[in-house]
Image (cartoon, rainbow over all chains, first blue to last red; front, top):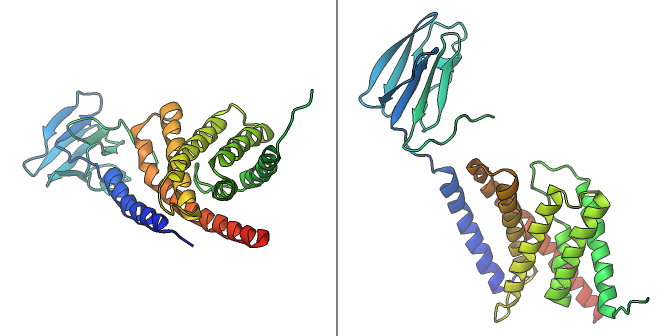
Length: 120
Length: 170
């Protein structure tokens, strides 16, 4: 049914396809900086080292940002829903978390900007 | 005025009509993801390629895209452009594939190449003209996987049809 050329082609495609998945889906670059914005104030950009906690004072209280191992997250926030805390660790450049009640947003930055926002 | 038609012209017309019918039937099926469909009409292209050569296959494929779009009302719409781009790419790769020395490709190889080329061409056009956003490429491997699957299945079907036809003619 299949000629030798068919089999060779099939083998090449079956090998190349996983590589393509790897290539296209893992080009995430590591983040180097963290951008933090409180309300209408200018955003502050800070490096992701060393590991530390950052306290940000927003309109309804103090949010705590944890920076560890090149990642960042909302550790705590005085908001009712805790959506920001539950959004978990930000790992890749471009990822963003926000606490709307406290008007604070944090975003990881890489060497080149990727997306303004990602919508699902 | 009367146009003289050869036997080959009429054969191409018959086969194109068959491909158009399948094309239209297939357009009625819902698609799980934009861009993914079984491409059953391409089975005809492959059968024609194996039995009557590349020239006939190119005619059947392009006539299918043209007449299919006229019947479905998508002529000169983005859908038509995507369809035409895919067809041109797969016909081009089949032209190359026919020139492989030795026993060359069988129906499965042809169909797989055509499906992958069709998807790649279509995707590139979609990216260049309609959604020029790098994130679109995330979808590309998924679509190629679908092309691999449907291309292989289509090739097996085309192989089965060709074999049966050969048995009938002998």
